[in-house]
Length: 137
Ligand SMILES: Cc1cc2nc3c(=O)[nH]c(=O)nc-3n(C[C@H](O)[C@H](O)[C@H](O)COP(=O)(O)O)c2cc1C
Image (tube, rainbow, N blue to C red):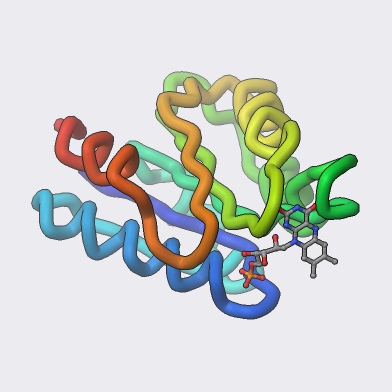
């Protein structure tokens, strides 16, 4: 499977999580393209069989959480995603609120089917992600 992982990272945590996710997927035999939202090539992302979008959580620590504006703009700029599978992930410190749901809704608004949502309190993907990666065919 061709997998595109795009992320927005301010201080490197989400970038590290994205790289680690890519390595896990590659270990399962998939081809992975990992890029920040500013570097990503839209055509490469749109061609992937699975699109993974990651953001750090922004908010007032316990309330009003959301993905970054850059992440949401990136999703808006993607063309139609009918029939594409997608996952969303975020890194956070205290609470994610509705950040993952906002990202999922934006992708589903483009026609994608969101098949996974993952949150990491730091740069390490968790066991839930490892199980997901192992189940991908
Ligand atoms: C302005 C600002 C607002 C934040 N708001 C939240 C928040 O509401 N909830 C939370 O859990 N973490 C919050 N964080 C923490 C970051 O989401 C977390 O440290 C994240 O892993 C940073 O990712 P990055 O290193 O890829 O930029 C905030 C960080 C900043 C700088």
